[in-house]
Length: 113
Ligand SMILES: [Zn+2]
Image: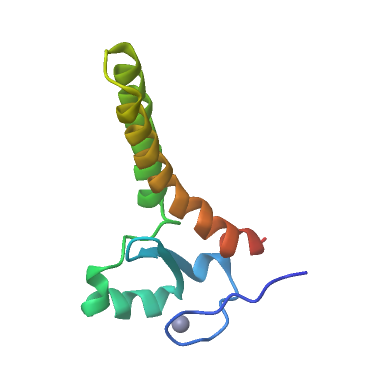
């Protein structure tokens, strides 16, 4: 069954994958907008708590770049005499960055062909 994805600003249905913009809002929230609605909203006060689009080339690039940094950091921490707390901290940051991407995919992007 296909799920209807609605824009968080105008409540209209988002019909095409090319028209959806998924962003992180606040600390753990995600939201979906039409491309036009996103432009209007990001110019306003709400733009301060919004991330750049997660489903953009830039979003995917920063996700990959962040993961490479986490893997390097993880090996650096594992190689040193630091305690498990630091390993946990690095993993937590990696999880936090990936979490929004997967959340956006699960709630919105996977419903498009
Ligand atoms: Zn809209």
